[in-house]
Length: 343
Image (cartoon, rainbow, N blue to C red; front, side, top):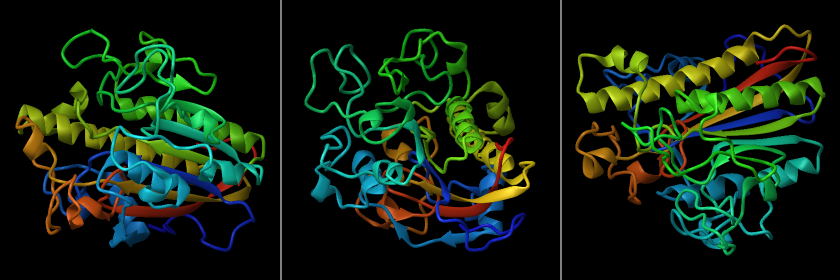
């Protein structure tokens, strides 16, 4: 969506700042602005009300990895060779959006789920990272991203380093651009995973602006991909509903809160000169959880036909932010003032 609620829209400078947000497995109808009767998504609703919605946006594929690859290359999955989730990798010959923008002086950052190759060849990590496994090693820092806070694949949406219901390690690390992982007992990894990601993205944006550099920030939430877990304060918002609904609805509301945090920082910066900011929010959709986990609520895809992994409209139509099959696409264009301050 294109928002002009609090800032002037005009032809901006040569190098606009770009923020690409994505969430994972959010149903087409799992937002307030698309008619969900329960879910609280006030920040996404405000974006939808104040901007331009693209209601017939289609993803590159109905599953995760190839959709992400199409997002950062602009190419069909069968051209760059990632055909399904957890297969293939982003190849060196591909030109990513980050690599292209770096030639124009952009600072580039990736935050959250990567899922286009492994991030280590030294230890066991996530779905495919193994000692000595080099075939699909292709981390974001080898694909044009200067600053990274990235995982290979999914993590729990609350306390992302822990298996839900226990203190044991889930098995997926967050990695930085120097090839080192964040200690799993680090306080910065506790609590809501969307907040954990945004805690890293916002300082990157502030730093780029302080250095007077245009920036690309890719913020790819894990929410609400399984393991779906919400923190106590978010579950309490849905206390009248089942435990599974509390977790699903709660983690979506927590993610929405972080989108609002990002937008608030952009819209209320105390700077005199301003630079354009383009914020694109996408979501992937589908009736996933009704089929794979009876504890969780059926994600809303109506009136679209099909479900998350299918090639029907529910699996491919985009309207918000997501990775694989997209549900709703929101593009928000604002102005980020130049100088000190920022999000």
